[in-house]
Length: 158
Image 1 (tube, rainbow, N blue to C red):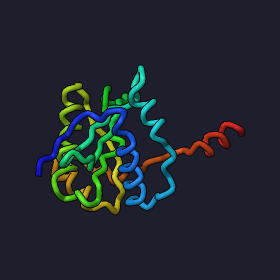
Image 2 (image 1 turned 120 degrees about the vertical axis):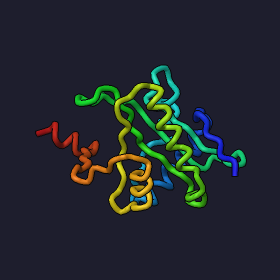
Image 3 (image 1 turned 180 degrees about the vertical axis):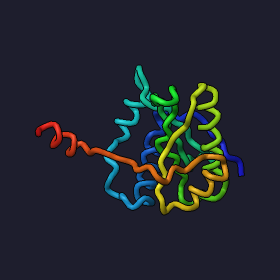
């Protein structure tokens, strides 16, 4: 099987959103996706793109994606955040995820970042084992904290 990894285009954002939605379903949050194709196109392909995205193709079909953006760590300096790496369920276990992961690692290295960081759900043992085999450290004592749009509004109203 020939897996092609390439930079995503504006036109790929419909397929990217389909993959994001598939991930949300996999992560048991089927109604959590609010972003639209238009949001992705505006945010990723405007004058000052907020993210970089790659897609994986097999037989000219988009079967995976990885989306990253830069962050700054007060401990390390310039870092990359891997927001999502998604492979179509029917294509998992065939090397597509690893090919996208490798592309992200090469990109971070080429940009001289001090760290690439992402989150993984505790029950996603297959992903955790892959990350650990690759040399990544899973920080099990840290907790991800989110404040929703509603939470932000409620907080600042106090």
